[in-house]
Image 1 (tube, rainbow, N blue to C red):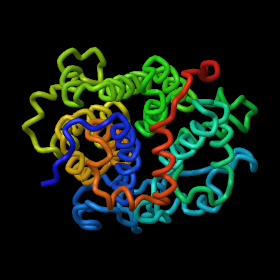
Image 2 (cartoon, rainbow, N blue to C red):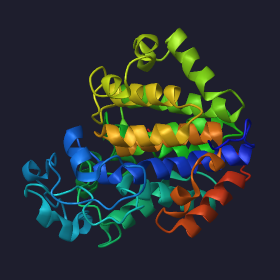
Image 3 (cartoon, rainbow, N blue to C red):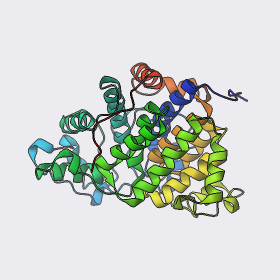
Image 4 (cartoon, rainbow, N blue to C red):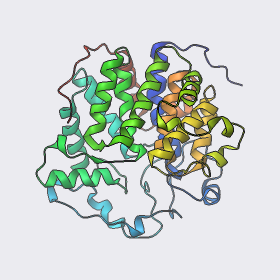
Length: 357
């Protein structure tokens, strides 16, 4: 059995959190939004390495989805729009094994912005986001979530980019907080403020804010030296955050697919998705490989759930806890490694532009 360092260094924890973010998403990508786990096993077996997605996707809802271009300047699907309204289309049909889904590609944009602007600059990120989404072939995802569609519809109406966020409830909105928390981890108040500002650009509302509070608090406490399991068990005991308001202690002896699948939905809504991350992180706090493999094969929104789970497990166990094949197998891993290293070792002045409101 692989032996992990008992106490990873601060840099190893930071790199582990960021690599875990991308690994958890890429590992789950081919089985993303499979709700029938028997179909998942039939198509892929037990997933433990990066795989290419395949059509048909038995649980795809693209056949009943519609996309309308709000303005030719703000087309975000381009030639992918022709697949909407057709049955069996995989959401990520053109991605390669080890490639990340759209929201994680945006995390790479955020890494670039943090490094080039020497800190968090929401206007710089928004400029990059808009350019990326409106440039043909910048991403090859066939599906774009509701928040992207609403953002660009509002932008087409003439709203300021900072005013295009909507009331949201999907776990995918949380993945972009991780690079910011890592970057400002030595300045907790700045980390929390910048992360909440970033969330408000696209995902507003109390459900998202509660979920962000969980992620911010947990990662910062782990970076400061607390064990991940201690932080999670403390949350379960105090239940200060309502997301901990489940009978986790009773669930710990139950099979994973009973807890995440019956007790909690595998869908993307934060009310169940974040507690599912809490449960899986607690169960695999010292076993990140097991945790990410289990999460992947539970289906549902396993990609975004896996990204957050990977970040938590990586922060606790460090980069060395992930197999090298997972690190090297990510798309453009050499460049990603450099950006992650640079963000993990950056010094910053703790400042960024005014709050999003």
